[in-house]
Image 1 (cartoon, rainbow, N blue to C red):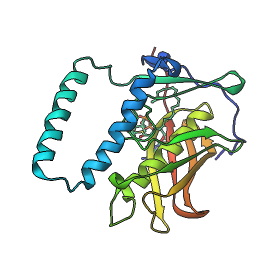
Image 2 (image 1 turned 90 degrees about the vertical axis):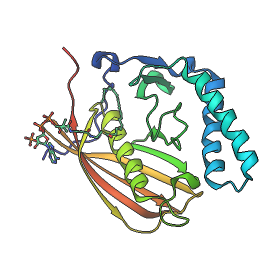
Image 3 (image 1 turned 180 degrees about the horizontal axis):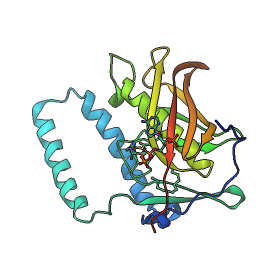
Length: 219
Ligand SMILES: CCCCC/C=C\C/C=C\C/C=C\C/C=C\CCCC(=O)SCCNC(=O)CCNC(=O)[C@H](O)C(C)(C)COP(=O)(O)OP(=O)(O)OC[C@H]1O[C@@H](n2cnc3c(N)ncnc32)[C@H](O)[C@@H]1OP(=O)(O)O
């Protein structure tokens, strides 16, 4: 296996993969506010003890909004382009379930580059529950997968997860700050080896490794 220092590389342009690209600063602030409110709505719905009449009223209001907003839909697969300090450009999937800024189901996890790889902080509300009061293990795997993929992408080697191994070390609490960090540990042909962990109060609650397989632009 070739182990390289974190390569400093420009990201490939998603347009070369045939994907639509939306500049982050062109996302209406009203959309981002709505996304946050719907995120909170899901948690409120998941835990409400409102009476049936109130629930029926809320249900009708939500159905009307769904019809209204669904009338003009963006194509699936759009990417968001972010300009970072120092002139660096980064891309992410706009409606990514873990980190997409317009996906109300996303926590969202915001990952920043570090000297080592990528790192982010996140709080998972009650909608991410698995065992009582704890984060669902599948969601921990999703957080790790996202960080692992982003670390490979940030190193200029975006790809798809071919293999993901997760170890759950301690229960991960809901509604508590978690840190997620990932880095590239090696490369071999198209394979990018990555490792990541989730911490609460400095203690690792889940960790994982993955093999990302680099993908080639179209044409
Ligand atoms: C998509 C990016 C678009 C471009 C955008 C540009 C910039 C964006 C920048 C950043 C983006 C950043 C972040 C993205 C963040 C998170 C993403 C989350 C990750 C996911 O959520 S992703 C969804 C789940 N994921 C899949 O949906 C994959 C389904 N799958 C396949 O699509 C194929 O399976 C594929 C492509 C993986 C390989 O297929 P293939 O035909 O291209 O290549 P092949 O089979 O020849 O394998 C080549 C070498 O990998 C080894 N290998 C293969 N499979 C292995 C396994 N399971 N275990 C161990 N090694 C394995 C072989 O042994 C060989 O190794 P060797 O070189 O030693 O022979």
